[in-house]
Amino acid sequence: MSRTAVSALFVAGLSIFAGYAGANDGHFMVDDASITPPQNCKFETWYTHTDPVSRAVASPACNFTGGSDWTLPVTYNNETNEVSDIGLEYKTVVWTSRSGPALALSGGANYHRSGSELDRYFVNVPLSFQPMDSLTLHLNGGVEHDRRIDETYGTWGLAATFKPVVGPIWILEMADNDWRRAPIYAAGARTTIGSTRWTLDVGLAHDTQLEETAYTVGINIPHLF
Image 1 (cartoon, rainbow, N blue to C red):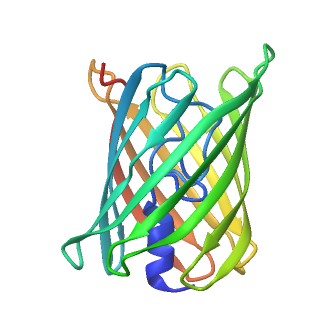
Image 2: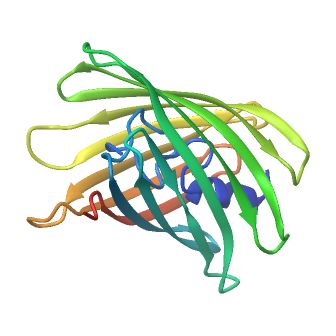
Image 3: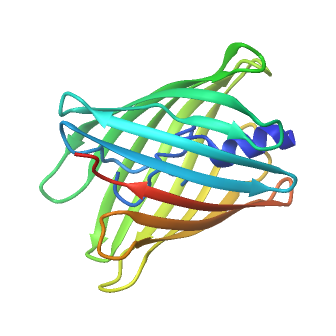
């Protein structure tokens, strides 16, 4: 896997793993089974550095109808000083239960500007359930097609979100696909900024195949209206 490909994996807005309301938005690799509140929008932005490449992402998302999210992640490459990628993602919750588990479906595509083409398509199915008040588990399974290498492969991810009574939310993740030879591990924390509803993210992701680590800082505005 190339350095460019793995850097894109870390920062893609929903990408094959990310998503991703809840605590698993934005740069986190494993998505959760929730969406933005009806008739509302959110905004996320984050900065990721993987030596020697840095990228900044702006990712607005809106729930226009009440039943689904539309997200438009835009990636700026600091090395080339240009907008390198524009994505379009759709997500809907297909099943919820009174006992807690929920199932969602998401899909999208990525437009790579330097190649002037849609270079990646994906479908992802997030399942979330809460075995206890402070712990939520997330499972992802999906399929992605990469046009640059003309390959279609399965994707998967596991994540645990810990929400203590006080203090930040903690997230642990593992993600991979059947084209790679080793998983990516990630950890992060999300904390409220002062008395606002805004949150601050810090995190890192380590690629055990390439032996590279990505460092991320992000800000999330969960409700714009």
